Length: 115
Image (tube, rainbow, N blue to C red; front, side):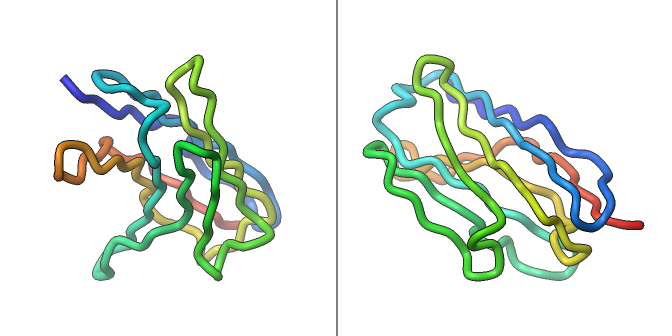
């Protein structure tokens, strides 16, 4: 059974940092592109960052230079290091993998940036 479990969310002041983790199981993690999305109420889910099986990365323009996606294939885990956080980064963050022609999601983790 494919499973994605996010952790690491919380509340932080503007300018602060958080690192999100997503532990994956049930598939050959190292072979898949992993993605982080975020969503706020009333808006569509937005792609934040992606990392391919070859460690190629891409980012939304809004987070370039502040966020870093990485993966540890030995731990079947993908990370999102978030620095210089802004109030507009407040959202639920979701881990994603496209597996067997389906988008699979974790349960999400809340990130709140507020003073």
